[in-house]
Length: 154
Image 1 (cartoon, rainbow, N blue to C red):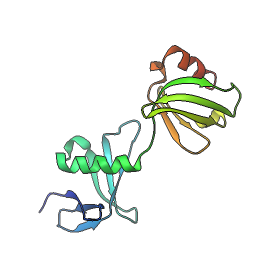
Image 2: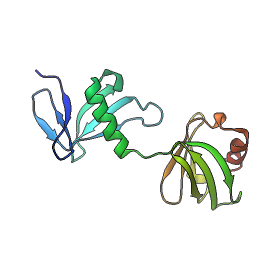
Image 3: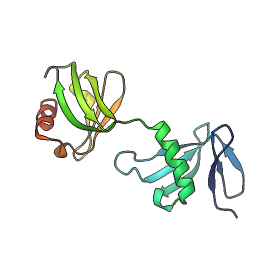
């Protein structure tokens, strides 16, 4: 029996080769717990969203396969992390927020307080008017001004 592995085909699609040596073309990876445990529980899904394989941990995956998996996850996941809240246009909603993220400065429109959700502990998800989700990993680690602005909406 062969160890399962990942490769990219000539068209750039991710291919999973299972223990029986069968190639599954155009698979995609999904994190089970993208916010609370991003390195645990990675599922490989076929094009019909049927699970093909489960990785309990990223650490258990061989280096080459892990690199391909991380590339695949990066293309599917877009969730900027808010590092600082520079300003808000109003304490009433809708309001425009100017935030510093791990991908640079941006503006987001918050339609209502219900678009800020507490995920776990001090971790927050903020959904803007366009459906983009922003992550605040630990609101207690934001600077004083950012926490003050955020507290007005919580």
